[in-house]
Image 1 (cartoon, rainbow, N blue to C red):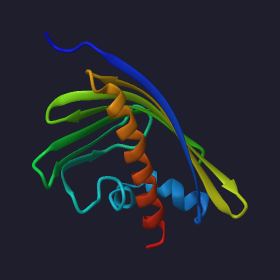
Image 2 (image 1 turned 180 degrees about the vertical axis):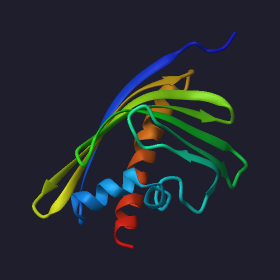
Image 3 (image 1 turned 180 degrees about the horizontal axis):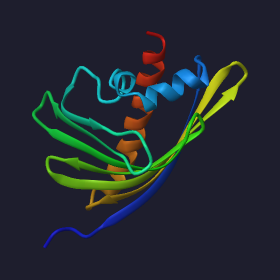
Length: 154
């Protein structure tokens, strides 16, 4: 019988980015700009990507990691207010196993000539290692925000 354990976790990360809110927004709203930082790293290659940034739209990033592991990010956008916030729900699969379902909210605000970006994620992580996966997700999201910041300097 499969493990039915569910671990719930919430985290909030904030970054003050040295870019205009319009530029930061574009890094989420435009596929070419998002591809520069989301899933782009030396350890993984995106093997399939779909991108439909609108309320009701879907995004998918299927990646193969250097060690052979496959990850599959599948999201649906629920609410988008241009230049202000994005709310989406996503499933994360690792090696075909559904690891988690999360509700994420991204807020973009002008602040002191820069942009304050805040992401809050509420997740349900499955299996006996759910707490470990939750901690890893927060760490991974922090890494994505670092990659976003670096992409804004290109």
